[in-house]
Image (cartoon, rainbow, N blue to C red; front, side):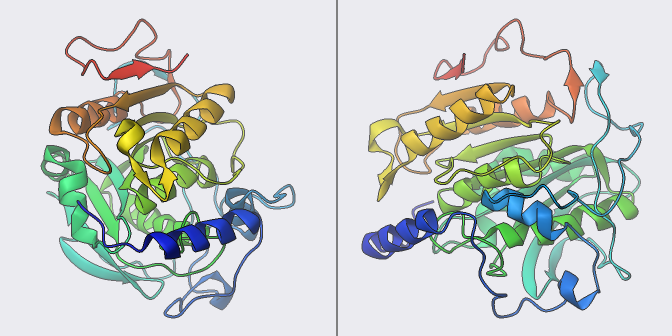
Length: 329
């Protein structure tokens, strides 16, 4: 998963993103069909501001109330109040294997047999990469998700709305695409709303890290690969802190920024907010997480549906977990 990248350009754009934390840009090309047009009631402006690190006290997180626990919920332990699922647009695209268009952008969908409630994973690719990167980034988990009847939605291009989460590959406004996919997947009986996760590599790993904050009202857990955060985002819903398992390549995981450090920044902040965090330093370089670590990340996500209590890994990591993974104290 080597990226096509310009270090100088990435550095300049990253500095711009950090200096403009909390500011927003205009809608980017191809961003038709957004909330301003009234076609798809999704997350509010307040929620987007929260994801960008601005004061979001005036806005509700999403457009609808919470959903009741579904019969397909993962785990066998107790769970708290349910996630808040966004309102579906007036006309939902049918979620099926292939590519569909959401807010003017292509989204690659993998899904399995109908009639089964499975997990939903949002995947964000790295700079210069493509949506098919999800097949490498998720490994065998993608096939498992399909077999379970769930959905993987991998985004191709940005709406360029909101604030960039790294180097202008992804923006906080792109979470509105995720809102629509989730709402339509629930409407079409494809996913268990308590099993909504995110993943990504490099610029996509930074986007996945930002989504932990920007969609904490429905995101159960996240598995960024060479990701983290570069700004100071705020939780959309402070009452719920998603679980987190990060992975990076140690000191050699450096592309303009240290992804070991950006991962540690995300880990420390989510832990300080009360979230459960595991970090895996595989030492193999940028976006080179080995299959056993990817598998462990997916195992972690499955064990952490929305609001699960008590903490499934409270007594320690499961037997057989890679030794490079450690609970963040």
